[in-house]
Length: 122
Image (tube, rainbow, N blue to C red; front, side):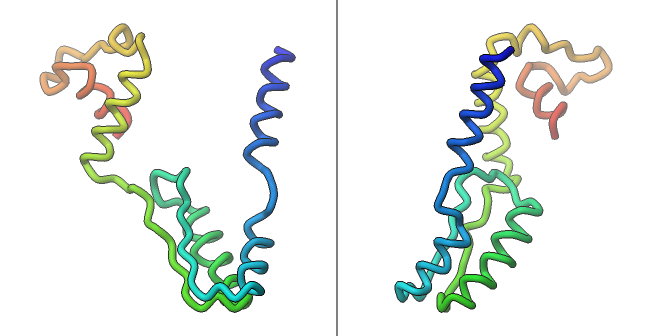
């Protein structure tokens, strides 16, 4: 268990690295950057962090720092093709997924593992 704890701490250190976004925004404004597009690559759907922190707090700081044009690329959202691709990726990465699949007799629409997992999560 000690190895796992050390591994988690190492991952957190790698993720929470510097420079911090607030410092970068101020520096970019000082450097004369006038337009900035935020690309939150790790998000697959809109949630409170994108709506509050990026869209409101970072935008306000960017404008105060001299960046005139602020935008954010939208998250992938809930399009059917994205959900299908995500479900496929999950099933492919879990060799035991077929063993976990056990549709009920009443649910005739769940005739395969993919349909079962889509219904289970969505």
